[in-house]
Amino acid sequence: MSSSSREHDEGTTEVDPRYLETVTYQNREFQQHSVENSIYFSPIDEDEIERLTRQHRLLSIVFDERLVFPPINNPRRILDCGHGSASWAVDVAEQYPRCEVYGVDISSHMQPDEIPVNLHLQVDDLNRRFTFARNSFDIVHSQLVAGGINAARWTTYLRDLFRVTRPGGWCQMVEVYYQVQSYNGTLTDEHGLRQWSTRMFQSMEGLKDLRMPLHLANAMRTAGFVDIDHRMIPLPTCAWSDDERERRIGTENRDNVQSFLSSLAIYPLTERLGMAPNDAQLLIAQARNEADTPAFKWGFAGVFSTICLHRSKGASVKIALVSSKCVRRYNASLSECRNAY
Figure 1 (cartoon, rainbow, N blue to C red):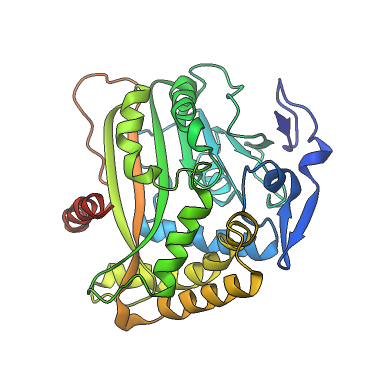
Figure 2: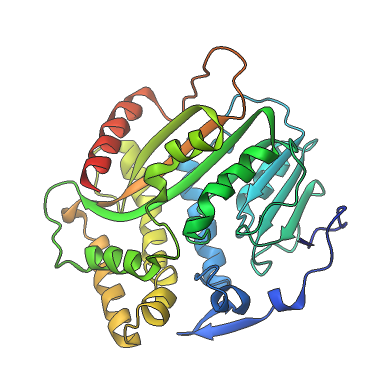
């Protein structure tokens, strides 16, 4: 494991130069090591940093401005898996200044220039076994890593999360299921946004499991976690909902969607699926236009949030991720999503 924090922690070394090399595809900058080794296929440039910053704001709205969901007041050590631009890790380190926060990601390119003194950002491949000691962390946070975790790695990845979480500690996972769905029956297989989802899933077939968000609860139970709370929160592609909260989410998500329809897909569609660059750009443009049409009332199946305890210490703990009104609506949507896919 390589470290890019101010002081190197025991067991870390300087960042290997091969992790710093970049390559350009379709005018976007990627980490060469990631794409050549089929680890991660999203850009690591300034545009992606801006998108991840917007995405962090979006998730803050989705989760009512809460960074940490489990009922823990004074964590001593927190691990953030797949920190990306480190927005969550920075905010958590500032919220808990007496806590040591560790962030791990395959790339250091998107790390901020200045970070809190209690934040330690390290470079490593989450597809490899964790080097952290058993029972190291009070909270382990894993967010939007489905595009980077190999399909065959998920079982051992979740076991690693369990192993490094201390007894009585918590694991908090957030994933997005990028299958678009309609809330008024207007979506067909001919629409660009449906084709975008279909081809994205095809491009990752056998390598990454983009359907994992649907199965996280059972997978984490198998890994040993208990008191599992698994919720699905729909993500409107723009501000079409009459519900005030959902409309706010759609408003914030609009620019995020317009960005990720390109950044998440441009390499997989062209380099893995073999689409001609012009065809891929035309599909992305069509998907963007449709996603930005309020009359369609479309959304991605949603943000899946899974909170679970390392080991039960008595009665189950109920965690309110969102308001009770939203919980009823989202639980119904989760049932529909499972039935549909």
